[in-house]
Length: 224
Image: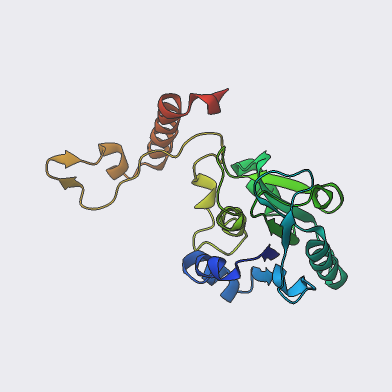
């Protein structure tokens, strides 16, 4: 999988992809993440990518010309399955959406800034808009990193134990059950006996029951 992230702040995005699982995924050749500096496609001497909004109002708007030039250039190199715009009014990211996108081959993610992008970008270039929550960030970079991480970790071979992702929260619309590790007793607090029993069927049943119980308590909306 290849993910091209268009941004005016590529340095802000380097760290999330240079460590841990994201780094290993790229070292294994399972994923490519390319940070594309939008200012490289600006044509004026100041490398400006924003301008005042028609009709007035506070805040600047990202211009269509450099964005169009950037996306057109990327598309001339390869075909893309999605051109995604990170937007607070986009489709809310959830596990089913991450699962679906993990089957794609090439993705562009455009990071917004200021008061957003010229609407013509959204009308003519963007194929999907995604939000990571009902709040506003200073830019789309952190949101783009979240989306990329949620996708890449699902690729076959990325996680050392490929069954790990299948037991994550939200995969079956349930929160993950409680987990424990050694020591079996600490400060008088004991690990449930069933987890020490070695009985796989009983352990599986216990985990499912606890997942349902936790979901009912904390996220009953998922059960609907």
